[in-house]
Length: 210
Image (cartoon, rainbow, N blue to C red; front, side, top):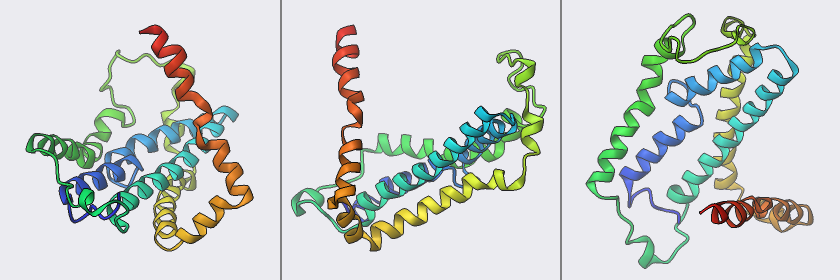
């Protein structure tokens, strides 16, 4: 697509808010949920916990990278389609716009205002709904992990946003050259079909079941 920012400004605004929440941008809802998950994983001080923390942190970088890439290629880059198609783009009906606006409010505020109540240290918000084995209760340990391990996922997320934006703004030729190089083709072919997960699932599990 490309160039849709001025044609669908409301949709663009909602996409920015949703993407920032998804990548765990500070003070948005996704920041608190992702942050506590990674801290609890690291706070177990086991090989499995640290491995989960590393994977989660790498995932934070990749999520930020592809979310920024999506926003740039859809809304900010030069239009890539036919003029008649691009110029016909418009924001959705008012029902969809209202729904998106209502969903954006908790994406921005509910994490900040309810974090202590829902996931705060010592809160009994969940009562007896969730049973946690005593050996898995490590919220106190998670509170006191080293500061660098608390901020590392945020740093990686911000780095993912910046690197993606710069790469697709100024490095399109570099990306294309890499893609058509010998190594780039190998990587592209290796990842292109997602190892046929969708094909196997749809044809041999979903269709068979239905």
